[in-house]
Image (cartoon, helix red, strand yellow):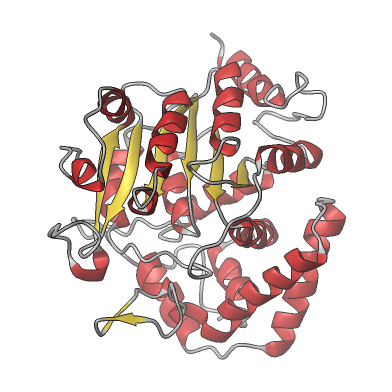
Length: 374
């Protein structure tokens, strides 16, 4: 097929992704795009009533994510989709995978609001240096440029004091961007949550962690700066802020409305099944499902069986993997590495097959599986 014709077909695929054959979506130009009304419809129609978690969870606590990203990069596909959970770590997986479309599914509506905050900051910031200036409400150091390494960026912002004036200006700018430019129907409580989350980045800056001032057995959670400057086993930085190319790839996905937050329970009856139906209709395959350590919590009830039923509904193939995080103390003696934990790639087809054959009935059964460890 001629390359131009392939691009047109690819764009048309997402143009038709919405219910009603695409009547509420617009595709324009040489790349895939969903318009604002379509984006909001997907968010609204796929979302379930919000639930609760023990913290705001504004920052991931998984230091080891760079080790799995080379394997994620090998699974990139022209018809690939991504499903994930939680805050910013999704962006590093997305930068490695470069999927056609992504859904961030979390039981907390606050996580969706956090991702809308990120969406605005991405769209308003043409570079990594500008992104961090907006995220932390700190003046941009003049010496930073597109060739600056992640460590250079965070070392520079670590010594720049936050600006209350910048913070107030950025809050107003983000609110206007979401409500007036995109016309997203956010309520008063949503904007209150957005301001609260934004203020955490303003107050803590690069030192912000999973739970501010939180320690377990004397060990702190990793800071935002530590996560963004983390390297793989070869010493190569892999986060979405590791280089300008990663950042710009994420920014384009955001600008084209292709990273869609969804309020949903992995064990619920709407979000994952709705995503599955839409992807199957358009012949898109879930290449990566980033589950973090959600399975641990699902095994506290019968939610795990409903989740694997939902997982079975997703369109997958032999390259599709679930990425799970396992922490010491959560896995009956699993030899993790303190708070760093360990990440495992589990082929989804094999996982679903084991579930259907009755080989999984406890979290211990899950940990005994021979998934791929980097």
